[in-house]
Length: 202
Image (tube, rainbow, N blue to C red; front, side, top):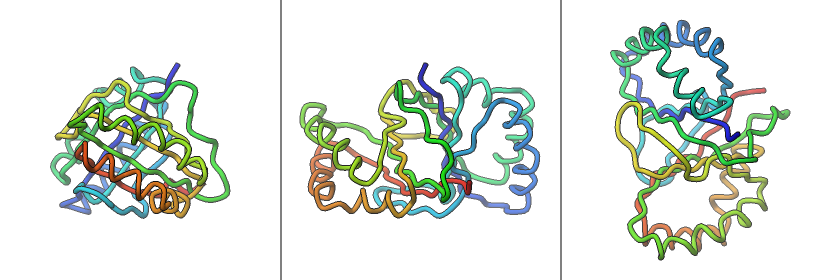
């Protein structure tokens, strides 16, 4: 069964209130089977615009991820976040057979992408080549399309998450000369938000 993920992009407007939210939401999320892959950490929005802080949480399934967000205890605490921050929150389905790698010696790196395809036929050559390019840098797709739902805020409609051994490896994949050339196809046929982000410490 594919994993499920919560992706969040957050701009904190009241840091003290947000700290209270983090303190209260962590035990609730843990009780609901949350695996924290990204929770803040170094990041860079390399295409498009997004909020300042990024999260990526993993669950055993799409339904489990959605249920964790809708848990009444979490929703009570989420009201603190809503008053202290601006957020976009999504639930997305993982790619079958590609679970997150176990923790390594250093934090993982991720490319999180949200895409609105304008020309599906023109977009296909871009998709066909990416896997080979990112694999050179240890990249693995853990989300690539699939079911999704925007739970708060607004987002483009297609979602992709690529996991790398480190943030430096994610940057190297994004900056690979072959990808620089290939992404011109995407840019010609789709609108995108692309974020490089560091995972949680092991």
